[in-house]
Length: 478
Image (cartoon, rainbow, N blue to C red; front, side, top):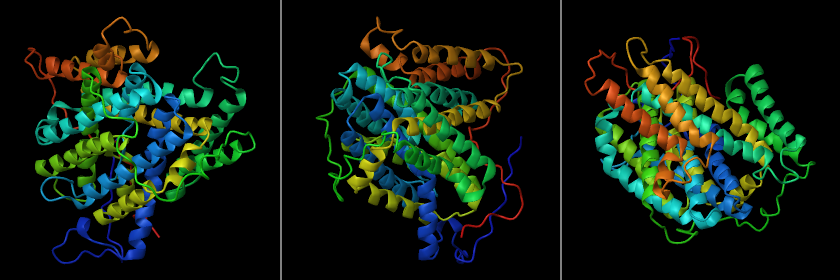
């Protein structure tokens, strides 16, 4: 199905000045703040989901999860501002791009932490690997911007599908519990609460439009939390002691530790992040009618690399361009990058308020798990739509997809399958996402780039799924 975009007409507060591109226009302060808050509302649930999932899977205490949430919001805000405003000729794509923690990192982080001590004991190894992967990203950003053709829809579609499928286990643990032997594992009330959240998301999308529909996940989480209150699933005891202002301290879990397998795994995650961000940046550039040159893309990818360096220091998570906000740009027609910069400012402010992290960490597991189930399934659905662009006739692409999925999902359904292998091998092959990247990338080279004697149909640069906006009246944001 062909997706169409109406060219947005500038509103009364954003009339382009002579010689200035709409991307560089600064709306009037009230409108600027409102539009920035809308971007924050769209991405907030997804941004805090990553620390909640990782913290829940590693059975970290609520206080620690709150620290992760604050660090996540702070780094996300800093990188969002850099992407929008830019730093010289080094960092920032200078487009309305919102950066947030990538779901790609969830599975490898959990696996590495569990392998090297479990819980907080394994986090120094995790953050050591993230720190090195960030330096790796900064080094290869310019080179990656020139070789993006090696990451066509065949590669990105397979990886996106595996990301969504492999994370299902993480949200199942939030809903039912992590210990199948526990007497309260899989309680009907907990599963029913998660089902209520899923149902609310479906109903809101079905019967509402505009901003309310876009906030379906956030609204459903709020309602689910209210329902969980009388069920004694809401523990706010950590909110009171939390302060009103604090800066995330570097290396709160100890000095970073460096292990080869963990480092390689996180470097592969950085390649996936680059692929995801590239697709989003290309999409936004098309929406705002601005040419995206290789140096612009390289600066945007370098900002992703910087996010991992900051994450390694500040106990956070690598960031990528958030697809939800890409869709919002297409829907509203608001092209100003300064709107996104304001959103980044709000994120930084929230990241400096520990009480915000404490409140988010107190959200009931079944509520977050129910919302995450839909979000992860949507990731898989996007991957399937990306694969729809792949040419199958006269190629071996069907075989490539089959082999990739079979190899990648083995450790997802049988987590201990590689326990007899060396630890470094387990860090790479034991993660569905990293193994998917390695397998599909190599097979794509073997069949579609290295001469095989069979004609291959070239594929276009991967693009993320974007909302279908009919050429009718452009939605306005009040």
